[in-house]
Length: 325
Image (tube, rainbow, N blue to C red; front, side, top):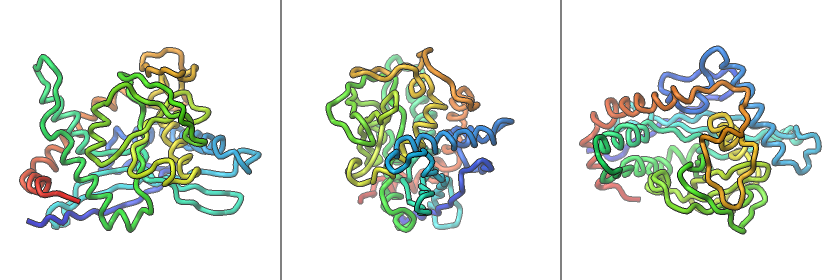
């Protein structure tokens, strides 16, 4: 058996002319925006929100608030299991690049934004649902997330990743609405106040199997904490501008997707419990179909089962059992 899975990386610019490819998960935030009659205006507004957020945070030597703009690349990663040239779309993320209009410099940002994975859809929307069907108490299947976690670590340590990206990924997500977060004394100039959750979530456990730690911070001018999943040292491995590029990108998408939390009219206090039923929030001028998003997750999970999990089951099980870094 050939254990040397190979990865192919493709890059597409995310701008107002973007159209999702056939392999893109439609539930991915940026793909959802790029559909329907409002697609171009959606994208234009979202990208403007990102630039405005970036400039408000990178305010030093930026008196007019227009020194920087953020360019986004969609990074699509296909995996070839058998070395046959037959590939499966394994991961899709956004990478930020920062344009400094004062110096005419293009600065590399962070990869990992809007992390998207068909195998994760399978785990949560097919495997986990089937496991708990008709059960009186919720439980997690054995080895839940093991394969996905190993495939992710294998990719991040691959020559394909290292040839394309200079630093490990950072994945920024929403906080969980079934946990309570307490503000700590620790404060970072860009990331803001750190928050501590009262409990570990299934998402945290799942991302831990991917090798990622998590910390929660509420950046200045934000109204709720964000979850930052990372390798290494989040506060010291990345520059201020790199961190701002991730914050401005991901908070913008969260304002669109979860306005009840991230576009709320009240700022999170010392003790904070997110509430997706919070009516005291503002809506962005961007059309987003949340109901369709949840329905499609199951469809995408079944796509992964049919085209990846089942056809390569024996190879994947043997590979996973022998995997080590």
